[in-house]
Image (cartoon, rainbow, N blue to C red; front, side, top):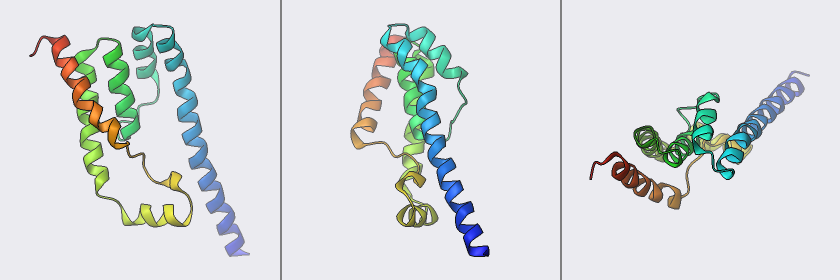
Length: 135
């Protein structure tokens, strides 16, 4: 009986983690809508109203891009700098996370940016410095 309860508790935990990912994406829908409509300033304000996830690489990359599009050069550079630091930290993988992901689901792994995503960060930062007049 105890193992059945443990399995049920574990399954509920995995489902909650997956639901959290879905709600994160859903929370970005209004931001993306404002970007599509060309209102980057409103999108940046709405992005910052969301629950902050400063320890997540995806959050920092999106924050940097939204602020870049809104012309908030300094805020964009700070977010991209934090993203680069997080990407470096994620290179050293946790044995526990990797084992859990292997046994259960890849969704248990933290988001790791694709190589091309991180290669674009210096370009955005360079454009931000041009916007700041810091050649």
